[in-house]
Image 1: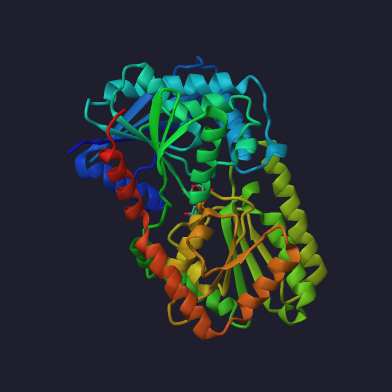
Image 2: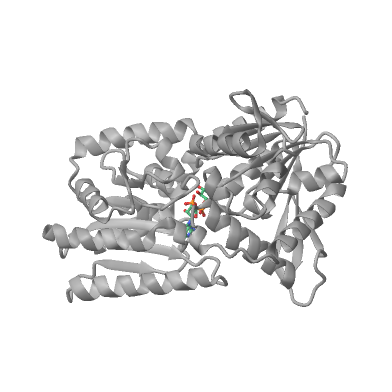
Amino acid sequence: MSRLVVISNRVADPRKTAAGGLAVALGDALSANGGVWFGWSGTIVEGGTPGEGEVHTQQAGNVTLSTVDLCREDHDSYYLGYSNGVLWPVFHYRLDLADFDAGFIGGYRRVNQMMARKLMPLVKPDDIIWVHDYHLIPMAAELRAMGCRNRIGFFLHIPLPPPLILAAIPQHEWLIRSLFAYDLVGFQSESDVEHFSRYVGQEAGAEAMSKHQFRAFGRTVHAQAFPIGIDVDEFAALTHGKEAREMLERMKGEYSRRRLLLGVERLDYSKGLPQRLRAFRKLLQKYPENLKSATLIQIASPSREALDTYSGLLQELESLCGSINGDYGELDWMPVRYIHRNVARKRLPGLYRVAAVALVTPLRDGMNLVAKEFIAAQDPADPGVLVLSRFAGAAEQLKEALLVNPYDTDGTAESIQLALQMPLHERQRRHQKLLERIRAQDVHWWRKSFLDTLSQIEPD
Ligand code: GDG
């Protein structure tokens, strides 16, 4: 059996629970036949040489965790600049937030080249290579240029926008051409595959050989949707763990007379937090029976704070929370509890389980795992209701959620009200269906179907 080599921007130690379901699932795949997990160490070296970085290696059972440092200049252009200042906003349809600084692309290419160079000596001839996410789009092209002939797959965790939006990136053609150096390109949803298919048809004159095979730039690539899932059993087990139960009891006690609504995400403009707060304000205004009762706990864990767009969002959120609490709060009830900190992973399921409603309302999202975690953590006898944005990749699968348009403040408020009033039998019916869906396509299914597809593809 082939070994697996995983390359992603960050590497997690799969032996630690804090690593989360994705890291554990990739860790399982790596340890099945041994392998290497390669990425950035998280260390920024002040004054280091661009395109150079020290490699650190650690052995976790039969898996080698190998990471490389970045110098400040490489970090700022590759990570902050091109990955999170160009690709992240544009792929989430936010051309207004993109910073098309011509200097960033050099750093992005340089770091991809450096990572390919550092990785090459670790790769054996029949290893399967799996590259993750937008930071590393040109990785296969760099590896191929160094003579790598292995099977290489790529999975994009974020959405692929429609061709005209993608075309706003000055290097759009180079980016998509780079994808043709892979054997398999995996997307989160059918709509992403459709955007890819339209782009390569219109902009690159690609020939569709079959539903999933596209030929352009002298190569054939297989592109398909593999919606990522969670480890449902692991999450359900966490729900019954000590930390989650303590959290559940504490919150139950504190909120016994209230209805709890919950939002959990990294503080990111793609997650639609200001729009959600406005919809919550509308709920209180339009349906006064929720006053002194409906309480929104919003966890917004710190993320990419070195970028200006993120500090602006933080201020907007703080001001919205302050004004809702100022306008509607009472001495014994505050409508919004906003927490700008990371909550321990083991405690999250307790919070999910106590919530009557989860608000998962991104403006655009590749998939959204919080929606799936919320479903897995519910008590099937008395489940909460998922209010889900139609613009999350998860909406293609989770049809029994209450689907909303987060830009429509009134419509979202109405759906939240529906969720709060939904009778038990309907909550149970919807939850049962949703649970079946996240079980059928969990993270193990995702990993296996991607890797099985990749290993069956005849190299071009
Ligand atoms: C990208 C794509 C795609 C959040 N706050 C805390 C915390 N979290 C955990 C959640 C969940 C994860 O972070 C977030 O996953 P999402 O899927 O919601 O979002 P992104 O981080 O944007 O991930 C996304 C994903 O990749 C996978 O392909 O679904 O569309 O954007 O697991 O629980 N965890 C802890 N404390 C927090 O405060 N411990």
